[in-house]
Image (cartoon, rainbow, N blue to C red):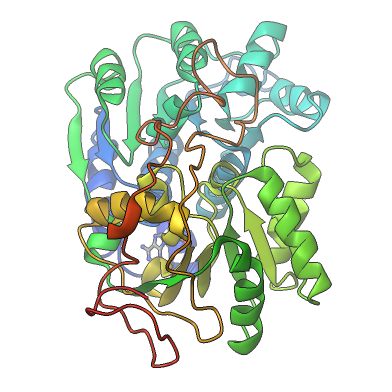
Length: 447
Ligand code: AMP
């Protein structure tokens, strides 16, 4: 199977080939023909599967080959495709893909999101674009100001729909849907299918084609995963030790809270390790700068919270560290999906303290495997330490105000309850490769 066989326009195949892709990924092989056929689509796929090209390529083809004549040569181009994403970073990334794959076509695109000035966006929109990528909040701001016209949208994409709902965007999405033309093609991408997503899909999609690709971590065994048991107050020295002894030059580190991310950056700085934090309280320019320095290799460590890191795509990222385990088990899969992308090998390590053993259990249940555990000599955890409860709730903010009863401060879906202290039966996972330096633990499992 090649991109040419999928019936895409020559200019698109050329751009894709120049980008180094030779074979469509499974989601692309299925989604591209379905979208080209013109019907609605419900796709179960997450970041890392190649889903962006899965919808971008056929959209570009459809728009390029079915030109709507403009009312006049001077009239602004109407927005013909609208792509909604949960985060600013993902929006920017998707629009970059649109530009990359559409470079040989006569189509224009723009991205709009919050945290940056609205006036340049107004100018762009006034000029007219064929494809608009947006976060829901800022799009709504433009709708309220009358600076965007969505009356000619032919194709709507909801990307990472589950995350948009988690972030409390459902009302915004419904407001957007209300102003779109009734007759259009709808594509919904989601990594998970909650009842809420099903309800949204039922109301939105018309006899959709359905595609589901396996979660990356259940099929692609290119990510080496392990946990390092550690005391809660030794995580920072352990991370610095790992970075230095292994000479990690590009490592993405996840913390649970924004405050934790800032603090860790400061601590690493004192160890001579350069890092920057990316989270909802950082200005958009700081987020953009941190991400671009990290991507080009000049920044050694990027410390991120889950929401800010959603959808981040970095070629050949070798190391992901869960400094804290995520509140929501599904986020573990998203986090480690940052590495081992597009066939590259990668390593994901989790620093797990006694407070996080319930979270670890939930993750292992979700991914249906025990994570191997390795004690790092010199960081043997205290087996008598008592677990402390962790607030397991969403801690980072979406790029805009929350909606009543949901959004940034709502309990995370599957992590609403505080962690239960789990007493003496606790375990740091199976397949332990603890070295002799670790004196504790009898009976094969654990540290
Ligand atoms: P996505 O799931 O859209 O975030 O894409 C994940 C990664 O896969 C990105 O780095 C893409 O550049 C890469 N990718 C997408 N399609 C292909 C392909 N057909 N062959 C190789 N890499 C791809």
